[in-house]
Image (cartoon, rainbow, N blue to C red; front, side, top):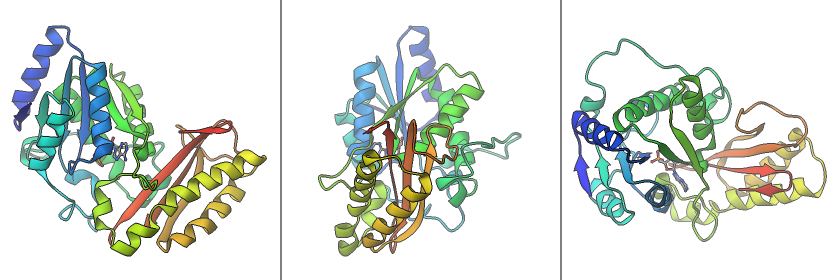
Length: 284
Ligand code: AMP
């Protein structure tokens, strides 16, 4: 695996592969890699000639009171894990390489953004689409692998690709979980021992709610109230419980079609998100 930190270098390498007609699979991450990230890399390995993964903790997508400085970083461990997952090019630029000077333009997300994390984290998805547009232009990927754990991110990035007619396929990958159901996340290291014991309740509550929905027709208001009550057992502070049609993230009254149940729960240092996408009696 080659480790590249220069913007010019990764772009030249990827351009060469495009010229040769090779397909490029790309996995953008913020590092501190775990099995969730590795699942994306392994799938990219199976479906493409060349696999590029990036590690960049993007300052633009963190709010002023968020954990940018404290975000877990382990670049050496990440290199080893990415090698094992079959990555060919590991791109880990400095912020000064990515954002060298004042920009002339800016990207603003205007839809799928006023709900869930987009509402709680103003400017977050503007930062996400900005870094991804830059990375897509550097890597020229055919396919980009993204986790459904961040289902709103997948929906917003699909919107970016559609809006700008980009010839990139966004490949959504199911959430990888710990044995007890807790969604793998770089932020799980922030949980205290007691919180770690309670945290799997988040997924259990989502699954129980899915079962409850499948028993008979429910309104989204009923579902939100039911799930909220269940989540209170986690002892975390329930930041949001929301239900929308997916991927357009429009409000619904009846639970019909493709629906996302999404939650965010705050513990002392960790803010955890999780979701289930339910489809006429099935989920993923
Ligand atoms: P991050 O490093 O948190 O920005 O995540 C990079 C990519 O990995 C995103 O597409 C995430 O959705 C994805 N990802 C993070 N955790 C998981 C997980 N538990 N299962 C599947 N994908 C994940």
